[in-house]
Image (cartoon, rainbow, N blue to C red; front, side, top):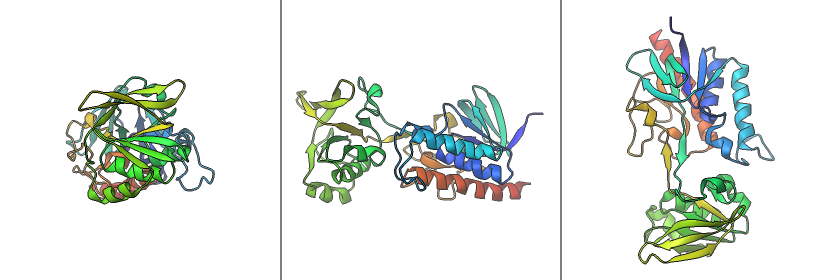
Amino acid sequence: MKHIYDMVIIGGGPAGYTAALYAARAGFDTVLLERLSAGGQMALTGDIDNYPGFEEGVDGFTLGMKMQQGAERFGAKTEYAEVEGVDFSGQIKKIKTNAGDFSAKTVVIASGANPRELGIAKEKELVGRGVHYCAHCDGRFYKDKTVIVVGGGNSAAADALYLSRLAKKVYLVHRRDTLRATKIYHEPLMKAENVEFLWNSTVSDFAAENRVTGVILKNVNTGNETEIDCDGVFVSIGRKPATEFLGGAVELDQSGYIVADESTKTSVPGVFAAGDVRTKSLRQVVTAVADGAATVHHAEEYLAEIE
């Protein structure tokens, strides 16, 4: 007979491995499916200074490995596999991967969300060498330096405000002539003396050798290009939740995030969403960890009802 787990967790970031830790400690037969390595997006962050318990900070890769080891200490299993599809129609949930199929009574979707990239040359190779996607993660490296924030929504406005308290100069580059961000951000940004708006502009290229030294801006109205010197670029044009593999199996919001509140319950009984993949106001390591713990509490309640 096909082995049926108590819980299958999709994604090995902080939400996934916290769920695995709590589930294994609760005696659940638990397996976590991760396509690359422990930590998810967190593993790509050089230094994390805002996670409690590490007074001198910790690099994301190390923290991810520690989370994996903590969960596996209590018996959680890790399988390196990419999820290709799911079937949540029955009481036993089915997960199809490139390494075989898995079945479980409960499922935690902790597949995360990836930053949207500019999609220009050299972007990938300059990540961590002047190109960043998380101001709160990496902003401290640019104290008294010059940075560029690309975007015009709430995230870009919040990043620009945050960086204005660290950097010497902040350029906010937006393809339109006004911010899409809510009005609450407009006045403080206008008052920030070290913030300068570069309207009707897009980044067409990076000036760089081993790391970023500036950007090439293209005016969307005239087509003219100019080079702006900077020490770092923060791309803040949104995130893309990793939910394509679900194929409509659970309810998503207009942006593709899984609809789930603080209980982490999705539209399907027995299926939970934790971390950056679900609808929430703040996406940080600590909030992902909190979600992971919550999933197991509610999964226990669900299992008690069906067994």
